[in-house]
Length: 273
Image 1 (cartoon, rainbow, N blue to C red):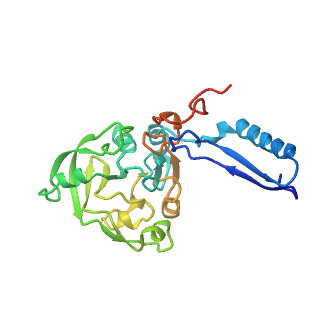
Image 2: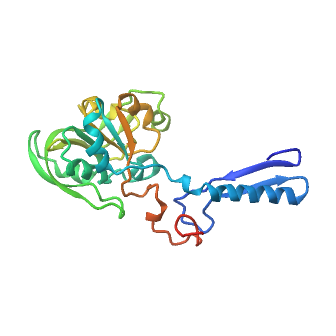
């Protein structure tokens, strides 16, 4: 659309987590010529956005369906990527959606990281091999189903410090070489291993797991609380990767969020036929 008279055509994608009146997609045109061609360009852009609006939803899968239909066929770990609890996106990292699916399906070789300092503290005084009932996760967001109570076996505890394996990763750029997850513990419920941390840590480096005695390539299904930046570390070890739909503050489905200030009607919260 840009030409000698239309100097710039700007697409402002909007931010679906912003509960403000002016949230949403918008366009602007900068022109030194007649107004009519500029307004025509804006109308074309608005029409295109309306026609394509349904394609704004990413394809997400039910975690139970993934585990039931695909787990046995994969020779390497199946990733259950959980953008709704995206740690780097501001989520608490303690959502229980994937953990519940692993437990429901009694997965032998399941793995997930849950940021839960209360559960870590509740293990103080317990030795490796000891068992204790914990109310795990579900404390950081009202959108989650809440804590899941499991009897777990303590495998190990640590101070949660580790050094990145990949110094060119997104995590290295944002937090440096040495990462502190806070006091941490590795526990197991039946076939599901859970790394409990006290400081939420983006899952962008496999050193997070290996530093705690967890070799990710030996697991059948791994929950990953991220959206995109985990791929550099996890994709090379994955047999398959599925973005799954679980509840959480970074959900891809805006209709699940409790907006109070956004203007209405607006897609997809309302029908705009």
